[in-house]
Image (cartoon, rainbow, N blue to C red; front, side, top):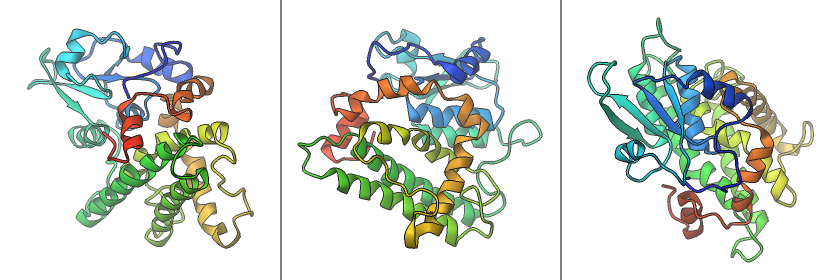
Length: 287
């Protein structure tokens, strides 16, 4: 995700700009991010949900600072700079990969008297493991399905309808799990409790409007009362989707819509050279 159109803003806009400015002061815990990157947004959401003090640094993909490359030689975002030893230490050690960063933040800042609630179900090893199974479904099925869909072009060996059906099928599998294994009606994966499962999908849920913008026929999720035999399933999805896009941490880490439209034009045309795009073309696991 390190490649972006140079005509795009070099920093967040909208609500995300205000949040970045609020976290511009020097702090031992630093999130290096890119406003356009959904993997960064995952980590940023967790920082906000857990009420963790931190510094946010926007990374220019064409002018990476030496101190950033010293932390993560691959130069990819998100990267989290963690203080060594004492929290006030100036010496830092790196973490990267969004799911790893998110779990670290949830564990390290687990004191709920100081920080936000645990993003995994407390007290149940089974339920925590079940959440991880469905996080794996999101990262291994839904997210790749999103990129296969948005990167579809007429010369691809698969049709646009196949890409759309594949993407929606993976979403339906997740929603069935919500319906069948939650004692409550929602809105979240676990019912009334917001969890890491919701965090993991939130950035791509927010970006689904790009599929409507760029792809003929759009996402094609049925409107209310238009879902036929799957109406209950799509009703449960709409409840989750409406809740996630209205979640404060999701709204606060979001830049202006128009800039995402610009940023994802290269994906829609399948001309971007990001590592995610290249993996999608090759049909291999995302980096």
